Image (cartoon, rainbow, N blue to C red):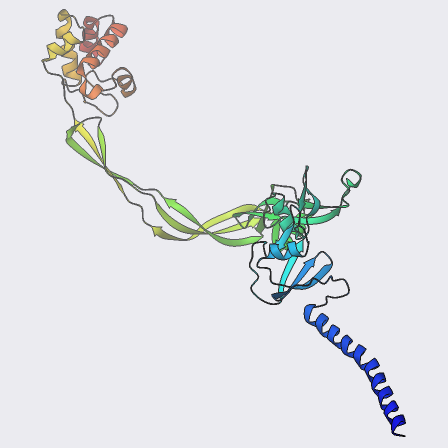
Length: 401
């Protein structure tokens, strides 16, 4: 009996060992695998590393989660045998240091794209997905009102690309709104669309518009918008400076000097105008406010006349008058001007009282040049009377010449 009991105990222990030992080995193996790996989702690949940080890599539609002690993003990708090509974008950059758990790396793969900007087409590789970034990568400058549309590309057979990024440039509109000139850029299709975009009333009883509302917007189009009836507006205007002239008898005649420079002022003028179908029919000033007063200019003008030295006979000789005519000349000049070079009766000027235009034409410095005046007088005497003697005879009879 004791023998049978002993045999049963041995059989039970053998059976227990048979089942327990495989279960223990399986538990040890499971614990080892759990400690070494973090499993990704159904599409992920698992990469094993001893210690380090947990890192998730997003590459196209694939997500890979791994544990690594790599120091940089580049080192992680190299160990995971993930390569990049020219134009690919890695965020963070390849040189970034990995210094935290749950570190994420995004890889944006470059692809062939085409941009259309008017008649220009550009093919290039880029990883950018945002239209504005794609335009930037193509070296295309966009203004705020320009837009980029994704369109079907007609050049599929030659390029293999089915879509293109087309730049639609905004058009420049020049319009006058209630007297103020304005420039805007727009994507509006018609004048009506533009007015609506700018919140401008198009009711003809309120505003007069110089173009039909269905007019297509072309680049650099021009039109005007005026309010019907009376309206007011203000504009800044210039106040011209005045000049005060001081005569200096110690300064030679013909010379002048600005002793204080003038400066224009500014004023704000408010007008009330009445318009009918865009035409101004009445205007009046409501108010004027001086913003900056003008500065008066001060100028000094010379009045000193410096006559050449010598007697009247010396002047006549210098003018080429024959000494036999000195008496005739002296008689006429003495009666006409008293030998004053600047004599004037308001109509005639100079030694022999001729027109100012003739005197200025023949003697630019006539006020201080008696010799030139006498030469001009000789030309007049010979041209009209044949000689100074003839001139003297006429003057004696008529008391003018």
